Length: 292
Image (cartoon, rainbow, N blue to C red; front, side, top):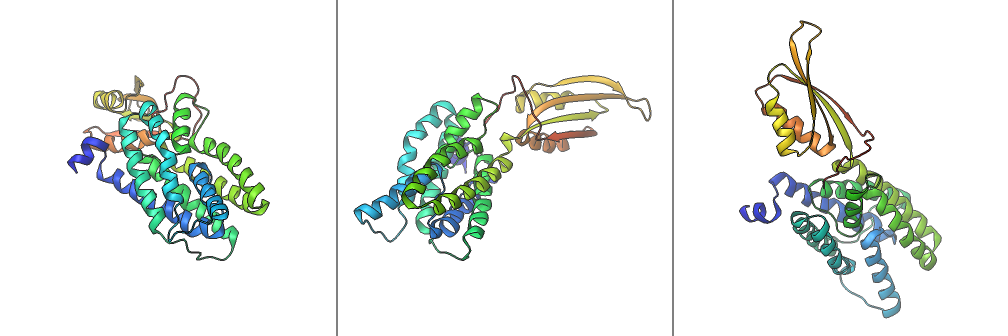
């Protein structure tokens, strides 16, 4: 645990979130996507295309799906991007998560449990999106386009991880459609849309939020937490309570949903009676830094 803390800067909740998310993501791929000859998109989609073409042209046969191994190899140059643009902690977490996913993709059997393709597409997209969202919320990623998406989203507020994934995936599906048929491409696109919508919903750092906090006592502990722990700015002022004319402090701040959850938990630990009004999923323009 000490090693995990020093290298990954992870607590047990984030580790479990990354592991469970990786399992759901790989389960979605090997149970609902691969058995139906569909493609996930992103770097894993590229790995699947390379696997399929290798089997078709070179007649390579193995006892396991080796697209996971190709996936890890293709991620190596992207790990460098993560290290340079998203920090050492994110780099180590992502290498760990991708290694776990590579193992799970290799050991989870590719077995169809539902016959209807559309059902597989939607269930797989939901499970995969939830899994990737959990991994991202733990401070890691599935590699590939997640790294590219996070790097671009960090620089440009109008972009998100899911949007970048969709752009890259449509190119991959065009290739899959030409080689393996339009039906395969269409079902794969539906899977990608469902998956990426769930990613953006689950990925709390993508969701911009605001909070009004009302308290009767000195708000310094709250202000210090917002400034020093969350590294966010805030505005506060004095007012009067309408019910009893008592002096009230009002604090207003803009956060990501992830930071808002941390703030809610912190408020419970302060010896201050507080009341908070929050708004999630709002649009914020200007110099609002997205932190991943």
